[in-house]
Image (cartoon, rainbow, N blue to C red; front, side, top):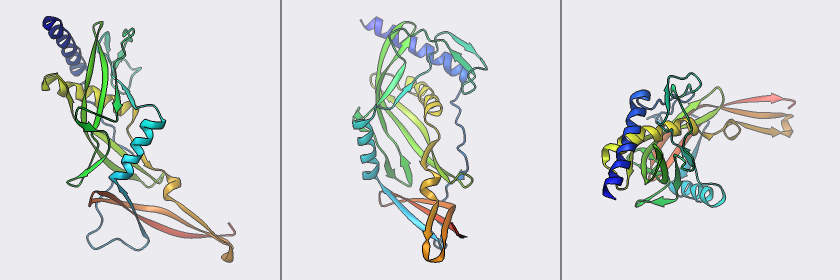
Length: 253
């Protein structure tokens, strides 16, 4: 039994090494717009609104996802049957043949596991996103169960052109139960690549949520406002977004 387990782990590590050598470090596409900066030291300019999101807000958000929707699932690219540099897959530069049979190479995010609860934490000025997961990996015809949690953070960008605040999930590390730390470092590349293809960039706030259009009947017009700058700070266990607006009026609308 011990020999079989060693063989399976060796097969997974070998497959991961093939992927790592052919693909390299996971490619992280830059989200649209510019990175969201900290608020100005002298205070926010006139016309600035403040939106506060705390950990309880994100906790409710994740509880709703797990209760009412399907658990988030990320398919892991298999290194079996790799054909390098196939132009059909521009995201990775390689194409993977599906020879997995009944064993799907994927991870499923869980509400909690491995002593970690999935959610968003605000700590040391960072927006952290620990994710517990379980899943399986097809290693040369052998279905290997995997379980653990991922360390990740979220960075923000604001694109004034489409009035959208984007988020970028950056996987810092993957901790697997019963697997040497060396393997966890390689699996990080699998997980980050899957998130890049399926999730990044996140849309935190769309244009409809940022722009304003308030009819003023007494003036026979509409007061409009577009976000021209977004700043952010993490303080007292909450994310504060400072949205500065450019106001204008439209007659007869």
